[in-house]
Amino acid sequence: MPLQAPHPGPISPFIYNAAPGRVVFGQDMFAALRSEIERQGHRRALVLTGREQAARGRSLLADLAGGAVAVLSTATMHTPTVVTEHALKTVRATEADVLVAMGGGSAIGLSKALSLRTGLPQIVIPTTYAGSEMTPILGETEAGMKKTIRDFRVLPQTVIYDVALTATLSPMASVTSGMNAIAHAAEGLYARDANPITTLMALEGIRALVDGLPRVAKDPGDFAARSNALYGAWLCGAVLGAVGMAIHHKLCHTLGGSFDLPHAPTHSVVLPHAISYVAESHPGHLSEIASLFGSAGAGQGIYDFVASLGAPLALKDLGLPYEALDQVAALSVAQPYWNPRPVTAPDVRALLEDAWHGSRPRH
Ligand code: NAD
Picture 1 (cartoon, rainbow, N blue to C red):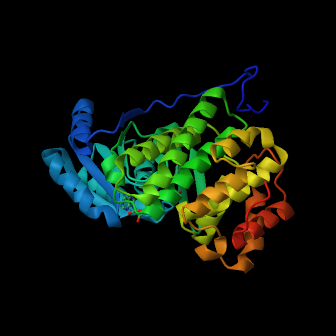
Picture 2: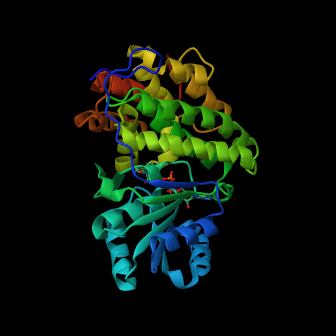
Picture 3: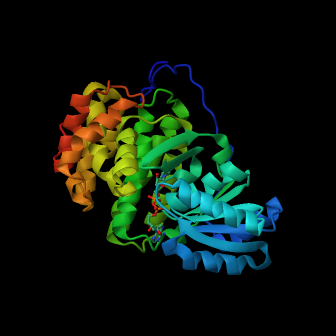
């Protein structure tokens, strides 16, 4: 199938799978959750969070009063199966009839993993911009390897977006998480199964984040900017849920799953280089990104944006040893994701060299 170029012209044939989730945007989370649980007829909610958000989980549990049975705060980055197996015991012991995940991609990942194993429905309340809530994708880690599946059984039934919950996300975590969202949309533009709907969502999502993130970085209490960023993150997450990802996500999955690099900062560092790699051979598909970032080159525009917000630019600053680069390149090309520009070990090694040093990309 031909690539869908993000500019006017004849519409190539396409298939668009709309994900059947319900989105409640911008409302008070407590009220929205009570009403969703009542609407869906649940009586025994199990609240899931990460360790740092345990107190928020307990507030939720208290607010739901008789409607919730317990809070489990063991969610961990990259969804280790050992954590999931342990959590399953709580699901069974409490006889929960719905999972309520509050947090970033880690809490939502645990919820998806439990839903896959139990068939329980999910209501999720994202507090970062990672976008997992909108996708039928689950990445799980076992024995140092991250395996990703795409299965509509893990798609949450309801997503509640409450801007107030993101106000505690630090400026730096907001920026890197926002770059994670932008990465979904950017790769969606050149996905093999891209279509006019996902292109529309991708460009609008990036536009909203390019508008919101600098203002959030300056003033984390700016709710107007936060609502733009959250709206953008939703759209970017929907793109990730609808089309396949390419070289950028493959590199980040390798760096996160096998080298334990932090998820959002890794996306932030790698994206300018991955986009530059694709822009070198397919500049037309990324020209709108270049203009959204006000630059001649798409990768360069993203790099300058990240630099202007003070986010990390180099893999060496995330703790990746230089000696690991050969292995990252080898793992990334061993089972590559489809990519518009062929992925070869020497080319990927050169990309990684630039990303490790944090040099400005060429395109
Ligand atoms: P995270 O969920 O691990 O959260 C990062 C840190 O931020 C944690 O310490 C958390 O407690 C804290 N935090 C979260 N929200 C906060 C808030 N509002 N205020 C203060 N602190 C807050 O990070 P993430 O980047 O959202 O998610 C990363 C995970 O999600 C990875 O495992 C990644 O693979 C997965 N992911 C999956 C998909 C998918 O579609 N399956 C998409 C994106 C990310």
